[in-house]
Amino acid sequence: MIRVNIDWAISLYLFAALLSIFLLWLFYSKKSENDIALNSADMLQCNYCSFIFLMSNNKEIQICPKCKSYISADADTKTKPQKTKHKK
Ligand SMILES: [Zn+2]
Image 1 (spheres, rainbow, N blue to C red):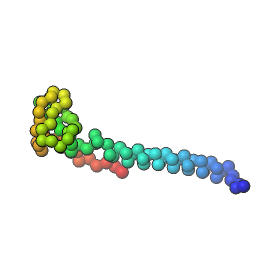
Image 2 (image 1 turned 90 degrees about the vertical axis):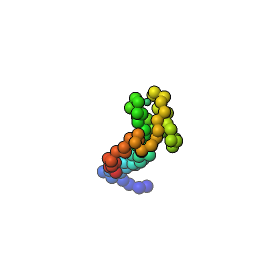
Image 3 (image 1 turned 60 degrees about the vertical axis):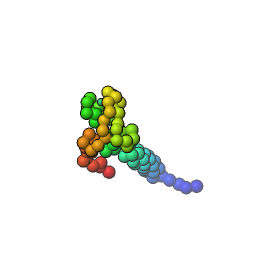
């Protein structure tokens, strides 16, 4: 039988708990980087109601989901991607 005194037992228990929290944090922070809403290159702003929405596909003509007007998806109407970098 392995004999472990109370100091080592508490240390191992705390280390395992902190390691599991760290691994969960890594898993969920990695998952949020792939979120589709963060990709602002595919965002489009309506010229008529200024509603910002996600382009459903890469077609030239998009339909605004709010006012149902047709919008040309060229470079002028696309929202500019933000230059902020995510801290890792
Ligand atoms: Zn609109």
